[in-house]
Length: 211
Image (cartoon, rainbow, N blue to C red; front, side, top):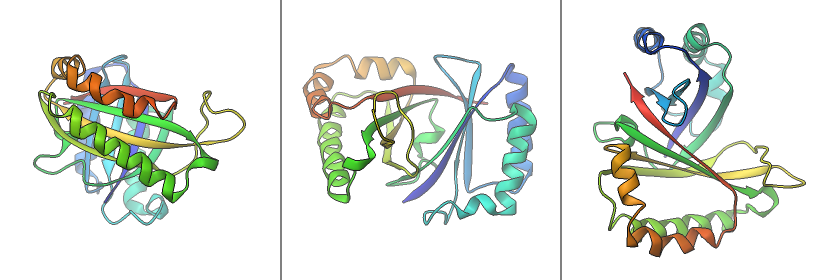
């Protein structure tokens, strides 16, 4: 398993991103990190970091290493507009890690917290595994997948009367063109009913890795 932190901030220029990347390399950083801009809004920078040995919880946030990392993020990008943490079934980094891809897909699917029991989680994970088994037969430029659950409950307008727990999926792509080609084929259309049966709101976004 791997523990990741997703920080999203506003940014103005690519020069700031390059300077921030160099500064983060010079401090005592997490196991791995990557910077990128949202393809839908180039003014949003995402910092994706993986923290070795932090699977047990959020206590890593109280460490000097995390303080130094966050201070650099704040110095260059100001106060984050959102932060969340998730435990994935495998690392997003490494030589062939999806987080090193040119384009990275992120998806959160939201469920009422009261429904999310261990048995429910296993069912969702099994459904998604079936979906992915069908989908990847027709996927082009797929560079790897990791999935898991966001640790803390969140608010979502599609979940009424209570907080939401979200299933989190991230996938690397050679390019956005490969993503669009892969979701425009018969395998994707065959697999989608497995996810649509959840009748759950979701958020999808894509990040282009920088620098």
